[in-house]
Length: 257
Image 1 (cartoon, rainbow, N blue to C red):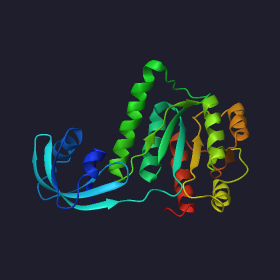
Image 2 (image 1 turned 60 degrees about the vertical axis):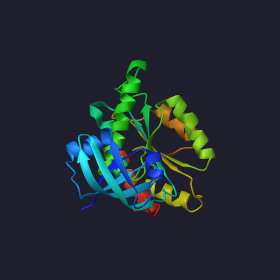
Image 3 (image 1 turned 90 degrees about the horizontal axis):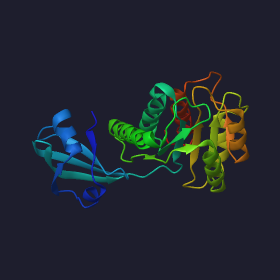
């Protein structure tokens, strides 16, 4: 069984070497001691969210406090072609379901998208609270999957802003895929063709629409900005399923699974 994982302050992680001891307090210590009920002698993985993993032995616990000794320090290597999920806001928390699964499957960034047909609407009063919910979901999924890198929750966007972002990403060499049931070329074909000439660090962006689908005007604007319409199989998937399904395929084709 893999070690339970918790996220700690990057400064604490960066300054800790094998043999060092320290005390951990705050929400993560509370989660470890009160929720996970860790005890002295157990091994944990403490993550800085930037690729550094500290494997530690618990020396003792108190109320919302634990002391630990560093056993091993591992700096993990990030993805050569990081994947971003642009997820349209969807009803029934299906957008959050998509984000949770995508984080567990290796996405490096997620962006909320207010699509034309999104039933859910974030006004100025709701945005910060909603973003906090997305960040909490990302953190939870990161710990669940024991990932040393914490995906970034990017600023929410609307369709007009997204088209501009697509143009900038494509200019930088990114592959931007709009998952759409009327596309004629498969996700796999797009990825395989792009990978043949892609340079290290260039990313892949997946755009997933809401339950009502991506409008014709949105699709046209995105394609004109440089995105590629891509088909993900013969069936139409839910907003919560399409992104994670495409992510597995993309990472496999990139040689990361």
